[in-house]
Length: 336
Ligand code: NAD
Ligand code: WQD
Image 1 (cartoon, helix red, strand yellow):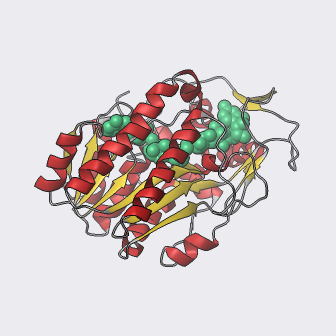
Image 2 (spheres, protein in one colour):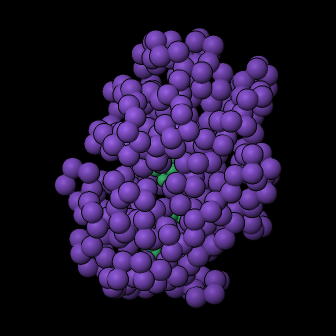
């Protein structure tokens, strides 16, 4: 039995699909602070299999211990957390509380229950300004915002834990920019309020919920002047977790990038989305967004080496097509 914290969220729900399809039993623990119960109904509809759901908070150590013991969990995939860079700057204590204290309580509960296998959702944001590209896993870690700091602190906590007790198996997965949706169009990203991230914003423009995209910066040192990112299909990302679970049979603590290794500019994404959707995406070049960097993409060799040959397979066209299918079938998200 695998405990998936934050399993109702964007990446968690797609990972539940891949886990169920791989024949795993799953229990989701989520407080639904940034997700809908409907996502988990859809996961079960896609897989025609059941999963268990517990409505609770990872900071409730006693409850987490009870869940680990009652369900006989052997590993945890830990997605639960807050993820907005913008909110983390205005409410840093909420971010340290949820992400750092939350993970600390979860690890305590795991230790007490003798469950010592965890996969943690980290982020490329831990690298900070690039000293070189692509980012290899041994690039210096220097996050530039509170959200990134919380991911860095948790990574350090995990490395210290592994150094103190070599029986832990710890996979730290550093995601680049996940986009897209399950090919069924039944699950996808459903941000609350105005989206901070590019793809949900572009998709909401295409579906008519917003007038135009603001492109943050047209004067970067990139081929067309707009920011370049390593977008990865969320299903590839989810499959990376199943691969990581299998390759984490042996005790270790390892950080691995999950990206494609290839960057696309904002304008390339806009064009690809217009092609995939058949809808125009009007945009305006605006000033740079504070804290943004010009380019960000992953070195992928370590993932291929340590995740049993896993690599991202889906291209930008598929990412946009799948994102659009989800958006057009669910124009107002799960509960709209
Ligand atoms: P999401 O917000 O869709 O999912 C997170 C889930 O965790 C939600 O269902 C939320 O309700 C739940 N949650 C939050 N705090 C909780 C708590 N204290 N107890 C129980 N449940 C709680 O986010 P996502 O995009 O699926 O991201 C999943 C993880 O991956 C996060 O840790 C995020 O920081 C990390 N990550 C995301 C991205 C990205 O671009 N989406 C990139 C890098 C890393
Ligand atoms: C991508 C590009 C923007 C919105 C963030 C987090 C990172 C990770 C993934 C969690 C940039 C441009 C965006 C818009 C735009 N999340 N853009 N107009 O900033 O690379 O990464 O999400 O861990 O930690 O920082 O992703 O999607 O916000 O931006 O022009 O309305 O799109 O400037 O070049 P980012 P993003």
